[in-house]
Image 1 (cartoon, rainbow, N blue to C red):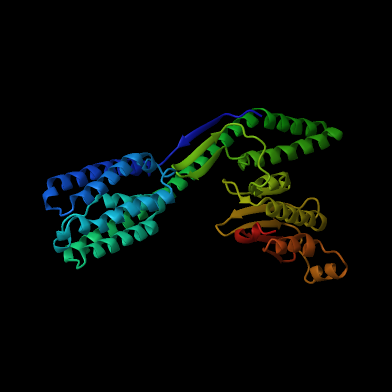
Image 2: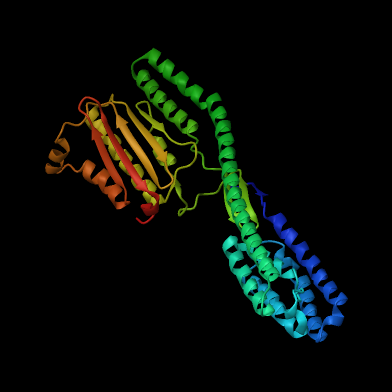
Length: 403
């Protein structure tokens, strides 16, 4: 099946990579100018010239590496920080007086660019490690560090960790925004489908129901079936059971929202929307209530939970009668999925379940509780004679995929 795909890329961290690229070039020029104006004070200027040559070549050659998160690999970060640390430790060899006053090191403030790359790439933890190594190198280079040295080291350490934390918050916000766009687009698509179906299929089914009831006989049975299908279709449309048309991905260059107008066959290993499996259960006597967003579970867990709900509805038909009303409620929590099946039947007399198990009828024990136990969940049954029965099925997300 053909599909049209449109990619919308969002990234609040991409401007940070562009700013870092400019910072590295400017600080490279600054380090060269510092040496040029203070060359006479170096006892071994050839060491400084050699190092700054390497620094300039490295900075210019690696500009694509700091253009985005994909190019800024861990191997590059280690090598980049190593060049900065080597420059700091070479400063006393090029200038023997560097330890006696708080002058600039050979890489000067270019070193902060290496630390910031760690912060943008890996967050505040990576920034803390990189800035700590720079702090140790500066203390070793000074020999007897002064108050200004500690001040500068602390400033780099705090600033890099703060930037790393801000980057992590920005990434989390991107993912939240991408998810919100998914839900918004799915809602718009659901509304469009609802309008189309309402203008065609639902009106035809409603007309068949009215005419069949009026004609009576076999036509009345046909009208009744059309009415049930109308209710089921309305539930399907109102619940938004269409597959989401947006897929958010957390890529290295920011959150990506891929808009798919017509999707191919779903992946067998992809999470299954529980609402899709339970939608066929809705009808004239079964009401389905579910969240507006997909309720995703691993396929085996979703199928077993849907089968347990089916077993509970079978019990309603058998024990509460064909005219009993049933309600299915799906609740999607952070750590678990809860499905409640309630009916308005006569309820279960006290001791009836134990008697059924003794007679070999294991519907509740095996079809419901057994399935939930295999998923690591629970099945609770509440019944008051004359007030109906309620079955509460809970599946923890952490264990649902272990089956």
